[in-house]
Image (cartoon, rainbow, N blue to C red):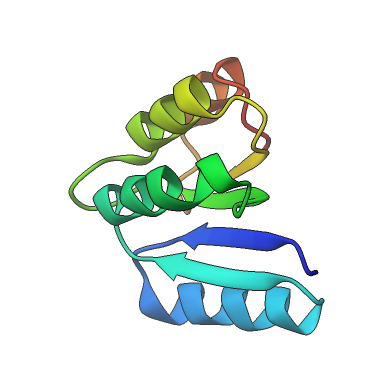
Length: 103
């Protein structure tokens, strides 16, 4: 059974490109375009071990990436989370690393 990766990215072109690439590598990919829907997906699937990793954009509508990261980490501390962002703001990545994310 392939590992299931959640891609959370508000930019549709980037989200689709990442999803396509991960799928071509053999992953089962689910995608969300905002922080609220990502948290809903994790709440539904993570307790049943259906989410094996998260690729998380830091700039999301509705609920920002740091808040999503914090909430996932609080409820599911073993799910690997990789953060990404188009900004070069190092404080964002420092905060994310303190919460247990990879970048």
